[in-house]
Image (cartoon, rainbow, N blue to C red; front, side, top):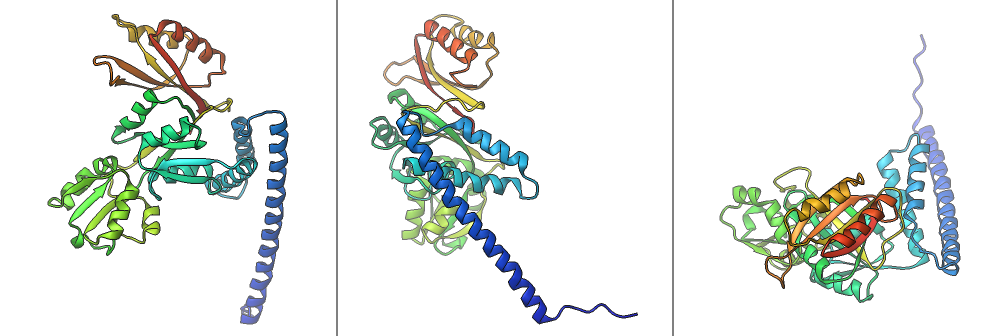
Length: 365
């Protein structure tokens, strides 16, 4: 019996070289097609501009993703969607560059949510407060703002809800970001920590871990996780609770990763602008309502929606700062204002509520 011959080192190298040449050829084809795609996108942008049509068509984008998933056979689905999300976003932004405001400085979770939504082709601008973002969008000095609205552990971000009550903007989209809280400092050593800093939400999300592992170390609340990371980069005794992007951005080291108290920690972000997009077929609508001062007013409001089969996903009240004892209600519901049952329900609410504002209709995250 003759033993099978093993391939020689020379033939192995030759085989690898051949395969790499094939990969290079495929990469060149991909690059050529990407260049062709972005040029076609620019042509579409010119046609839309002549017809005074919106640059962003959520329904068309959703149809592209559904077609790609249906036709995909061997490529992992989530990476495929991520790749095409970046391609589609870049091509869309080639039609019109956009500025996106976020709670800064660089490498906050708001920044990460913006990049996840728009890709790397947009221009990102940091702001010190959430209200600053609302003001800049309202005045038209930036196109969009990415703001946190609720966390799966700690609930609502009240500063965002309050800003909706004071500024006239529209919700254009939403992004759900899985949050991993990292304890970071200069050395990566727990013993060097004399102060822990972060935004109030991350501190609250990690309170049990901090109580158990750093019981005698004081905590300080700052404007954002980015500010916290900056402080840690300047002072070796300071540790920040921050994002993984902050580790790279500010040249820090992870002391412990994933210190949030509960798994499945997710923050919902809203994209705000001046105009909501057209329907995508898989949308949400958000309202801000004031109720008449009489018994059963909330029940009457909910009944208007229930009789049309409208599915509510969230309802929350916030006090009106200038009028003690008065509240406004934030309501999120499935489907778009262009859908008949939503439009009809909103028209009736407009007639029966003491205050009615349509905050926007937008693709679901």
